[in-house]
Length: 166
Image (cartoon, rainbow, N blue to C red; front, side):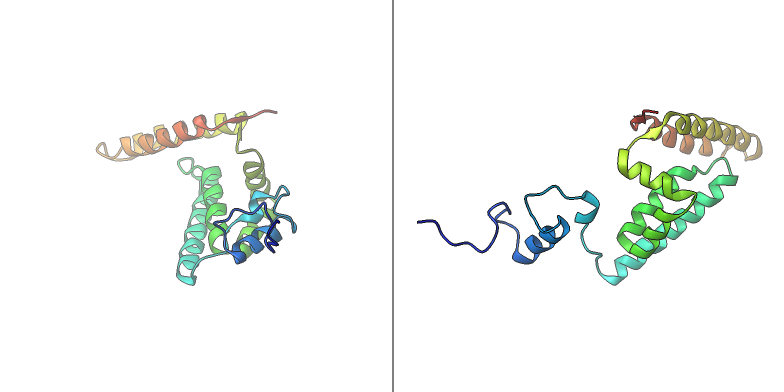
C-alpha cells in the first residue's frame, strides 16, 4: 500500500519543506516543470554582505562608466561584474541596471547567451592595446608593463569566452 506523502515525489529528499516550497513557487508551482534559472537565485544574505555586494557593484559600475572614456578600463566586463554584484546585494539596483538604456541590453544579452559578440571582442582588444601602448609611453619605466599585463589578462579571458553568432 503506497504511503500518503504530502510532499511531491519529484523533490529531492534532502530538501527541507521550506526550500521545496520556495523552489516550487519559483518554478511556477510545479517542481517538475522547467524553471527560469534566474528565479531560482537564493534569497539575499545577511545585511552586511548585501551592503558589501552593493558597494562592490557601485564601484564596478563607476569604473565601467569611466572605462567608456579611458581605454585601459574595459567597460563591458565591469558592467557585467556590477550586475553580478547587484544580483546579490540589491534587486532594485539590479533591476535598474537591467532596464538601463545603454547597459541593460549588454547584461541581458550576456545572461541569455553567455557569449560575447565578435565585434565587441575586437573593439575591446584594440582599445586595450591602444591604452597599453599609450600608458607605456607615459608611465615610468618600472610601471610601463603593468597596464599591458592587466589588459593581456582581460583579453585572454575575453577571447576564451564563446563568441555570439550574429
